[in-house]
Structure formats: C-alpha cells, structure tokens
Image (cartoon, rainbow, N blue to C red):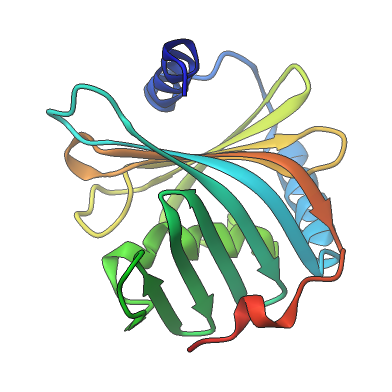
Length: 210
C-alpha cells in the first residue's frame, strides 16, 4: 500500500467523527427511505463485495488497515474473508460466531462476544432491519449529493453500545457504501465497500463451519 493510499484511508477514518453537511430528511421522508431500503435488502438473497476495514484506537500513530471480501446469504449467514491479513476469516451463522486466524484452529464463540458486534450490526443492515423500530436510539437521515447518510446514536451513553454508527447508502441502488462505528473511549471502525455483486450464486462451503 502506498503512502498516498494510506493517507486517504486515514482521512476516511477521520470522517467518522466529522458532522455531515447535507440536507436533513423530514421524518416522513426518512420513514419512506427506511421502507425502500428495507424492501431492497429483503429482496437481496446474496451479496458479495470487496471491503477495506480501518480500525483506530487512541494512541495509535496510524490506523490498522485490512482488506478482503464479504459474503452475505440471507437471512443469517455472513462471512468476511481477509486478504490482508491473508487467511483470516470471521463467520456468522445464526447465533454461532467462528473466528479463524492464520495458522491457528478456528475458534467457536457466540454472538455475545464483543468481537461480533460490528458483524451483527452489518448483518442487521443487510437484512433490511427497519432502523426506526428501536426507541432506544436516535436517527438522523441526510442526503449528501448521490448518497443517503444515516446516523444512529443511543439516547443515553452506554459502555455496551457504540457512540455512533454512520451508514452511507447509494441514492440510486440503495446498496451500502460504507459503515462507520465510533466506539466508547475514542476507538473507531470503518468498512468501505466496493464492487458489489447482488443475488449471484455463492459457494455453499463459504458458510460451512469446520
């Protein structure tokens, strides 16, 4: 990765905490968009996309950058294959969470594991779970050029909840472009998605647990 590419990724991570400059949607417009997005996602049986993952913790000089491919099969299966670091993967199947690190045996955990939180949030979005049903969260929806920006934050601070989740959605296809999560104590995580393939056949063994 070149210094220029890393610089762009650092700037993308910084944007997690930057206010969105766009046109706020009215509650009725936000509900209409929410329904359109949910309907689109419920028609999505499979999804494959490349991704960049950027993680930053206070005290780090530069973010940790990973990349790979994400595979989703409705409604419960989500796999993340890493090409950087090569050989690692995460797999969600229902309430089972498998973690595999290069050179080590896969470890089975439950979705209550803290490492599963980001994947659970991503799976909920891919399922098309309506955003407006959770009364414990605040929602702000804006339109910024050719994308919708949805910001979600808890009504009250909680050590168990992200301080903010920001989803950016293509205004035409309603496909998810990015998901940014700001965690308590200043940590951030961001997924940037590219080259999505919707409703194509995925290999069955992608979702098989060892």
